[in-house]
Image 1: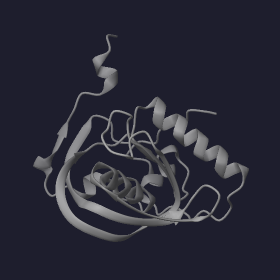
Image 2: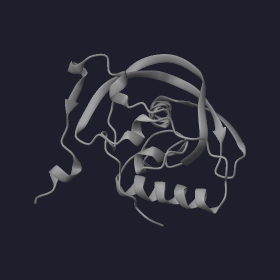
Image 3: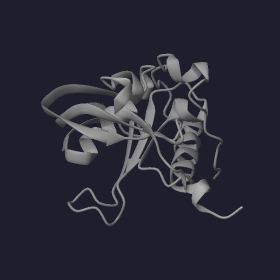
Length: 170
């Protein structure tokens, strides 16, 4: 439907806890469609509603088709998500559409069990691992007002990266 502008790190909506979704009607469906369109346009693998200025507990995730495993290319939509179990932890590099030009090393669980509701409000529970587990944790953090840079152990573990826009000639 529409690609929405991304909210940048200094916007207060990214630091507030998002509201639970209570209505699963057409407005939510439109929001989800816009979120997916925005994620694709930005070449992201996940997006939380606060990143487009909407303080609701909604996230969308999609691993690229070229990723290995059964999750490759599958679109995940989750409302009111909550991590109910974490297993093992390892460091990994993360970036964020709301913090362009930065990357950082963050320790996250390698396996998580997540529960929430689908786009129609039906209960969902899933166990995910690897990159998908990292993405779920990153996006759920957004719903609670946390950014990945809050989880970086020290300033030396944050660095600047070239963004896609910088790759293109002006």
